[in-house]
Image 1 (cartoon, helix red, strand yellow):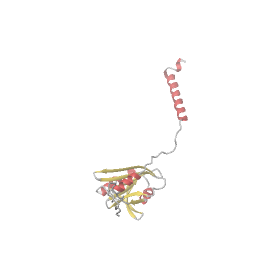
Image 2: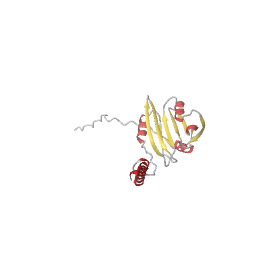
Image 3: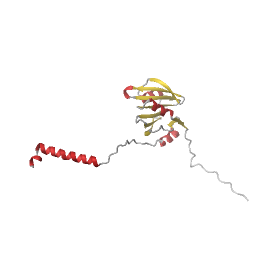
Image 4: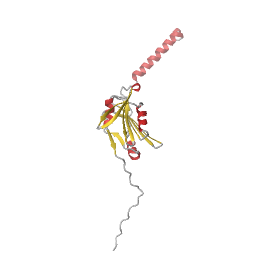
Length: 193
């Protein structure tokens, strides 16, 4: 019995016991085989942008079928407002909508697309979008320069998915300021006899 607990045989027996233990643990532990993509609610960012952004805000309405919004981030650095809204597409590729009033607009678009050369243009919902492609990153981008802002739809998604996102964009109306709660009410006229 001693020869099975020392030396090489002891090592083999100890490894076999450990592997059996790990196998039993994996067998009895429930495992999820479903994909888990975090979902974010970006409605608060849209409401804040409608109120505070110095440019018209564009949002997907509706979000393309089976797409999951998984990131939303608004930054305001030195007076430059930028919104990034990311999606896992129906084909589980990445697509992102980016809007900003950064100047120069062409420089911002090139930075978001990771390339400064257009490969063509496409008409989407009656508007012309510039197409850009960076092969080594497998990144496709649609760029639209607007008065006062730049809109970029970019990612590893195929052109048809990026086109669907760009085609779903609707301009949101600016939020109106709410009346001040400290406004004084006009007193009711008094009755005279």
